[in-house]
Structure formats: C-alpha cells, structure tokens
Length: 354
Image (cartoon, rainbow, N blue to C red; front, side, top):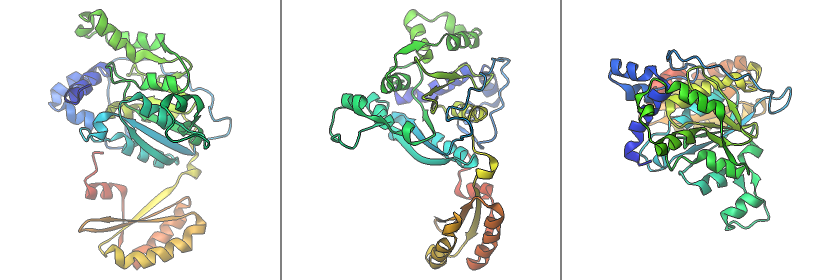
C-alpha cells in the first residue's frame, strides 16, 4: 500500500474493527490521536461497540505442562517503518509488555514488506551452509530460528487486504503449509460489517481482497481474544503469534492475549528501581562499575542512561524487590540522587504517549 494511504487505511480499519470508533472520533474530532496514543501495557482501549463475539477457549499450554514463557522475539513488518514514514510504537509496547510479565525479550527485527526477508528472519541456515545460498535453499535446508530459540515470538503488520500485505502467505511458506480460508473469521468479519454500507457495494475483486484477511496457514491456531474484534491472533507452532500493525489493535489484542499465555508467576518477574542524578555520567562511572561487580552474583543488573543536559538515570533490576530497594538507598547517597518512578521518567523523556 502506498505510504500516503496508510493513515486513511488505519482509520478505515479501526472503524471496521470497532463500530463505535467512527462515532467516537466524530465526537472528539481527533480519531488519529485515539489511534496513535496508547499509554500503558495494562490498560485496554475502552471500546463498547455492541458486538459481543465469543472468546476462544484457552488451549493447552503449547510449551508443556508446568512450563512458562521465558524468552521472546519480535518481527516488525513494514516498509513505512524502515523508511521513517511511521514511528514504530509496537516494539516499544511489546518490550514493556515482556518486562512487566517477566519475559526476557531477546531480539527485535524490522523487515520490509518482502516475502524473502520474512522467511529469512523466521529461518536461519545450518552452520554448514554458505551465506550466499539462494532463498529457496533457505526454506528447504534451514532450521526455524526465532521459533526454535524463543518461547514466544510475535509479528506485527502485513495482514491487511492489499498486495503488500503478505505476512500470512510468507509464514505459510516458511512453515510449509497451504493457505486456507478460515470460516469462523469470515463469519465474524461479515457480522461486524453488516451495518457498513460500503460492504454492500463492493465488487467481486474488492470482496476477494477483503477476504484475504481470513486466509491463514492451514495448521495455524486461531485465538479470538477480544469480544469486539473479529480478527484473531493467528498462532503457528504454538509460539509464533501474528498481529496487525495498527498500534491500537496490536496493543488491545496483545493485552487480551495475556489470558491465553503461560506467563511466568509473579515470583519470577523482575523488579526495576531507578535513581536520577544530575552528576555527569563520567563522575559516577567508577562507582557503578564497582557496584555491578559487587552485585553480579546476586543476579542484579546495573544500568546507566544519560539524558542530555539533564542528568543520568541509574537502573537496578533484579528478582528480589526488598534487596533492590535496599540497594537503591545506597545508590541515592553515593550518586547524590533520588528515586524516580517509571511515570516520571517517561514524562522527562517525552515518551508518555509511546
């Protein structure tokens, strides 16, 4: 899809997924702001469309009984991300989602709307293969990389009705599966669109383009995670979850997917404590190096993040909240700083809307 049409398409899709969106945006006069301004990974967007689809039952744990997600990877798809047209909000949201839920996010990759690039990111060559081998050999001889290495992998983008929306098709080829229409998704799509006049005036070509959004890899799971959204989270190999790229949809569906995932118990989730100082980073560097060496065996990570012309944020991350808070008091004194909240940091960095 040409980049000049992306914004209009995003708002069009929002009104199609959420019937109340058009009404709400007309009242506020700011539909783009609503679409682009998520604030928290724990707050879903409050839509009340009157649509009340049935949720999917929670399937058995794909990792096996008693196991939970420990590692994750993300594949962000879209030319508009790589050419700077669109700010990638989804990877930041996913990173915070992983941290809050005790998942170690290992890798984020951004690829264009090209089939070969997606396949290469999902697959990798065995050690004995040559780097310049053709893409076909990639698929034939390669092992699954992200899915093999990580417990939870997501893709974002490329599942719309246009020619460059090829995520389902590319991943079907990567996992050697045919594409098939999913009857329940088609039914929900039709139900959601009953009140849309444009549906009744579509020609055959336009109808087929619309129905491409229900053309999934044959062996995929379909998880309907939200009562007011017709599109499911499509999952391959029990690990790879396919999401839309529109931030408000991505975030609402990711939040709703939480009930379907084997997440780590609270005891396994890290705690982050941050201290701000106006001292230059070079002044506090020797102390931070000494501190990291001292607490390394406790599994505590010490990070230093300067904010230009303002100061430095020192981050302490570990499993034992009591120990981290105790350490924070020491750090406050040593670097002449003060403990700050995540909200204060986001406001200072101007990232409250990401």
